[in-house]
Amino acid sequence: MSNNYTLYGMPASLYTGKVRSYFRKQGIAFTEYGANHPDFQTRVMPAVGRFIMPVVEAPDGTIVQDGTDIIDHVEQSGDAQFSVYPDSALLRVVSLIFELFGGEGLLRPAMHYRWSFDELNLDFIRSEFIASLAPVDASKEEGDAFFDRASGLMRKAASGFGVSEESGPLIESSYREFLLLFAEHLKTRPYLLGGTPTIGDFGLIAALYAHLDRDPAPSLFMRRTAPAVGRWVERMHGPESTWVEHQEDRSLIGEETLPETLKNLLRYVAEDYLPELRAHVDFANAWLDKHPELKAGTNGLTKPGTRTIGETEFSWRGTTLKTLVMPYRFYLLQRVQDAMVSATATERAPIQLLLDEVGLGCLPDLRTRRRVERINHLEVWGELRKP
Ligand SMILES: N[C@@H](CCC(=O)N[C@@H](CS)C(=O)NCC(=O)O)C(=O)O
Image (cartoon, rainbow, N blue to C red; front, side, top):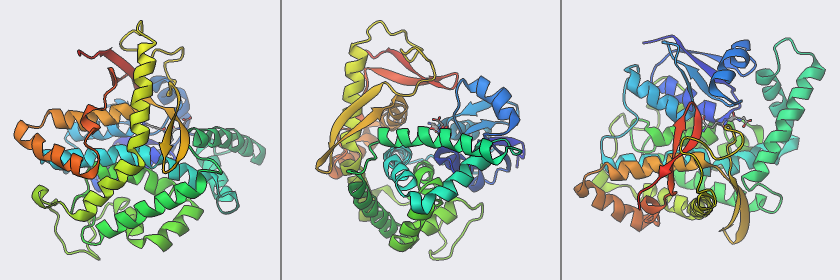
């Protein structure tokens, strides 16, 4: 077991939770520092080119940013006890869909439940933000100034993910539906695909831990609505192997007999997230058409660290939402598509059948004209794809 990994992030940070949970489930010891650590400010941030977390420094000094890239770095390092990528092509595709949905699709409820419930949440969030962002010896005024700045940016981000007074009730009913479906699924297995967590669990834990489990308002909601999901969060964030409400069986589910509860979760993803994904791919392709001169290996914008290329509208649950289009999402979507492409023809047919059955049949073809790549910790566009 290596004990030389360093994780820079925040307890209240969604994507930091994904990596922390991965380290714990893999039995990898690590030291965690806040974004207020002097090394983060002076050495790590300049190396990754923007203020963003999580960042991991591996035992050999390699700096890796991004939850997914960190997991893949560790998977390839030999330090992981088990692979979080299922051997079965079908389960791999399913798991990667939940990585995408958990980190990106559940951002809307995560941001709504953090920033729309000030009476219950604000004291807690203020304390959390100050603890990880302000220097440890900051005065009260300095701490408050850090919080005011960061919370202002995050409220703006929440609105960019479709959170508003009008969308609030719909976000709540949609999230409730998700919780009930996931709780039903977890009745007979401890993790998404069976007895061991896979990449999809680590996608889901992002939103479901730091925001939706830890913040006071959604924590109460989760515990009341779907205690089984609360138990999954506990399991995901503990290093031990826990067999309390399930028979001990570490194997993954069989791909021939996918539980209906898993298909229902996939149907939910199709209804809740596919319209947004489709609108974002369309917007990105129109944007790429308008930037034919874009140099591969850049994001095509003035600042290389900028994460969005614009905003677009789509219909969602009978209303219209407008959200920020972030190329990073296509990076995760491509992982689903790559898993399809690398499957054999015999493996691919049942995967497509499953996607068709649950309303996600178009996922393999939802492509941007250029791939999104990550170079030097930033998202950049690749060459135009061959037609
Ligand atoms: N795809 C990135 C997303 C990281 C991310 O958005 N992190 C948030 C904290 S949870 C952040 O650093 N936000 C700071 C900002 O955007 O200014 C990853 O997985 O690492």
